[in-house]
Image (cartoon, rainbow, N blue to C red; front, side, top):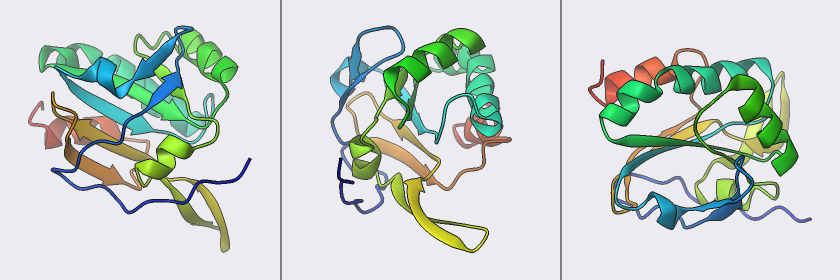
Length: 161
């Protein structure tokens, strides 16, 4: 499978790129399913790794205040559907995870691209978070976020304490 070209980074006011992906509930989730409410889409590199587990559990533990403020949460990774199902169940996440195996959607969001680690350059998922308004427009785009403390910072950025 060839890697789709990365796109430019998204900015507030941009239309969120459309998607339909397999989800951790055994169905599919599309951008259109999120219309009419605010949403937080976060891209993470790999299910069941320490940093990604911490980030997912931080979102899980913040679901009540996020939902009270009108936000739904959706996680997206390049993992296969079976991995996201297992991860969501093991961590009792309570929000859908989506499988973007070909990382086409990550590319459309500018969340797939060149990374550097220990002097090595490679293509991979760039941990990123997007806040969407009820019409599916980008309100906030954050790239290269750190897993630890990200959800608390995002809540502060959204004025949720």
